Image (cartoon, rainbow, N blue to C red):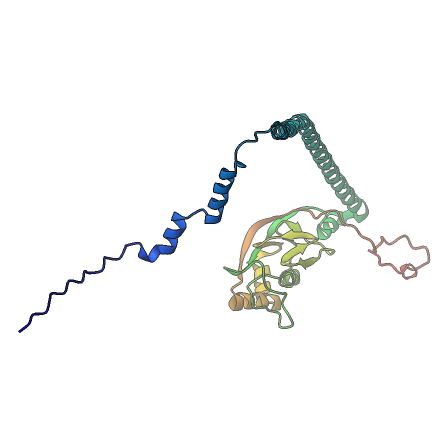
Length: 306
């Protein structure tokens, strides 16, 4: 029985660990394109890659170097010369800013003094023409600071309310956000007046018969001055009676509905004493004091009387 010769085929060599990275290996081994290498070798063979050997070529290279050095030197000299000028201009600009800021502060101080003077003249006029009721007229017009018992009502947005969204409340009187709106504060103030408040302020802004509560975007304005929540409303009056009357009024129920439905935070407390500042100077453009009876009625002027 013949025997088959043993199999002498050799096993294939083991695969290289980096066989799967052949592309990366090729890039690393041949980082420079072969064409560049051939061009470099050709230039070396022709001698064009060496330094210029002729006098003309050397002079051209020297001229280029001198020109480059001249440009750099001129740039440095210009920068050195312009540096003091720029520093001087900067100092002059800072001085102008300081001067204008001082002038603005001076004008603001003059405006405050003029406002105080106008307010003082108004109070004296009220005392002069109001007779025994001068102080009462000044109080009712908001021309003087007042203090006395009353209530403190704090109204704030719901927790987690987005300060940037939500439109004004529509016909239903509500919105899907927990933001306090200008019309909400209008109802609160009107409800307090109706409940017997003698003087009211919101975040330190005294309200008068000429005060306006409006909105500008998402901000609430009182007499064109923006306020930020929480809104603290102080009202002078009989504290317990005022609090009870407001909570039982339609405006008090409106505020309670805002709290129950939209989680707007509210809180009212009776205070033994609250202090309200005087209102800014009042500017009356239509009403005029009633003159002495001269036989012609006020209706002839078409203006109201006080």
